[in-house]
View 1 (cartoon, helix red, strand yellow):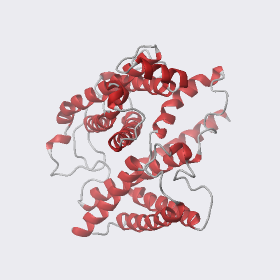
View 2 (cartoon, helix red, strand yellow):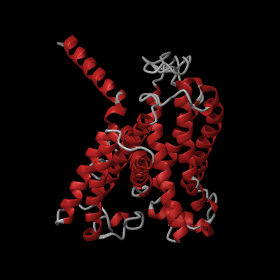
View 3 (cartoon, helix red, strand yellow):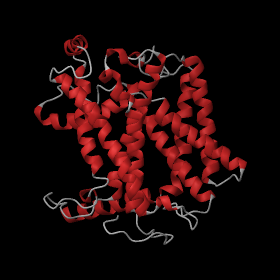
View 4 (spheres, helix red, strand yellow):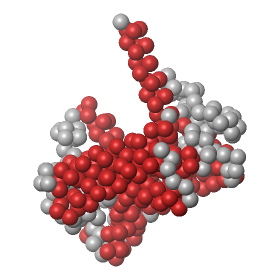
Length: 375
């Protein structure tokens, strides 16, 4: 029975892997289906359904964070329904490779606009905080921390942000697949005979080093200030602000993010280090084996989006003058988080360079060259 179970699990893993590798074939259909389902929720909310996740009345915790804090269900829900219908139609048009010239540009503009809004505009920093706390909670679970179920404590408006983020990534995949399909590039790797040199492994290694350095330094700047505060050192802020934060317990979220940021900075360096391609030999079971490209690309891409999104939120609040801190409170009060958009962009670029450097020869179109240590 054990061998039979193991064989079934292996077959299931192979089927899942095969399906994921064929993402260009189904990405636009998935984006269309996601839009249709979320649009149906918009109709449900329009006619009085419960669970509308936007606006201060329905998401009081997000009143000071969300760009949609001021919306009303009576006006926003019909817009969601209409945009869902538009997305469903556009997704099908892209899946069937409709559009040439101007119409192709329009479809791509809509797809990338959906992706940008869902990934960078609507969500706020709470998604990043929850993601940062997950590894800490998993480590603390055997020791009884936290005492309550962490995931049950996440409110629906925050869970909805992850739903939106998933939809945003589907639209990114749909747009990329449509771009490739409509310009006769390889559906699996995106290469064509007319590709420019910046995507070659050698070029990606050069600009990827700079992007990786920035993506590793920025979180360390943030982590240094927040960890110093928790140690009672008013680095870049006044003593009064430090004592206020300590008394209110508001420093712990910064410590959680700082701890993850330090770990993230270390893992970011793996994008240009040998141990980012081959597991160190001292690791049990994995030592000496190649690191799958997607094991690095998927989490790094997610973190780059979450960080950029949270950073844009802080920039928006600072510009509008309703941030928790201002620059007059000290350079460390708001300065490090204003660098988060740069961190997110740099991490995204470093991840892309890692992918270009390691992808090697495409098994479908034959373009590219085999790279030692590749996927």
